[in-house]
Image 1 (cartoon, one colour):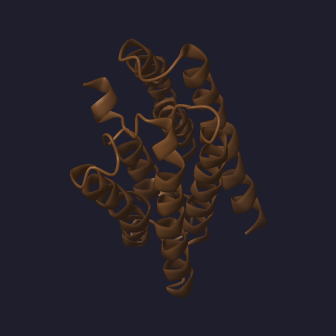
Image 2 (cartoon, helix red, strand yellow; image 1 turned 90 degrees about the vertical axis):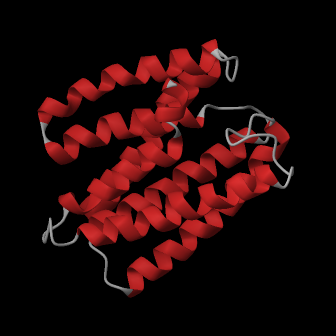
Length: 187
């Protein structure tokens, strides 16, 4: 249940929905975050579910490593289309920065996944747990308590090794949150 509730489309979606809060105009700019969710989460997840139904991918967690790279490339294509649309519509810098940072995170995961099954669940929950207090205040640091719970669930299910989970926990904040913060400062 933990693995399902905290899967990447949901945790990444939360980051994107809240990302406009880091730029002027919030909460009136909330819809840019929702549009980003459409291209970063809803479309890729919908396509993934269609691939599962068609028998081209084993399950929605993409448990078979050989199937991960094409799924991640498809996700990158959807995200890139979203970035182009968001930029054309004048989205706040925080939304564009978060979306670009997520592209970088997915790209790193795609490259690593060619050889090793790094945990996307761990990367996304760790990134979200760090982004929440940065956007909403220090009381949200408590969200970090969910990170080991998700890692435990992935290992217990046999979906990942401890090393794959730890690599995901490091990758999410370093790549996604780190790049998001750098891009925000540059904007």
